[in-house]
Length: 146
View (tube, rainbow, N blue to C red):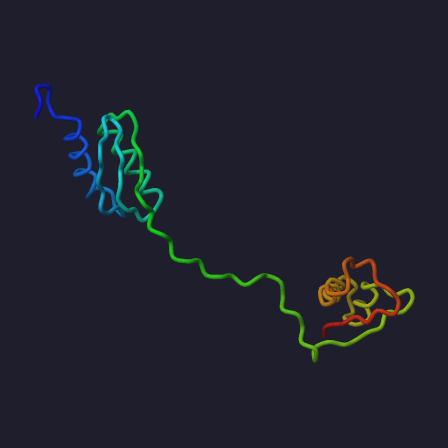
């Protein structure tokens, strides 16, 4: 102990000892001091725990700068979510139709499904040959899902 109380390094180590067990999800907490600059190291379960260590440490010890090198434990890999686009219908669930003059996808939906508003179903099944539901050509063979 110095003439004026505890040394800066002693204050840092005491703060680390106090914080080590008081913040859940933090392990192996240690600090090194270089002058009045402190580097914190260890492992935390979450970013919140990492930030809390730094906040609480800075309440206890007045530093010129605190460097937070606490590693955040990697989260488990996220499960792959399948795309929301429906699987293309199987060939046996389709009818082939050759576009005639005056046909529209709405008219075909009305004819095959009884509702003109179901035209997107035909459009989606034919995305490989159609870019726009309003632009179908005479002679094109369209797949009509059942």
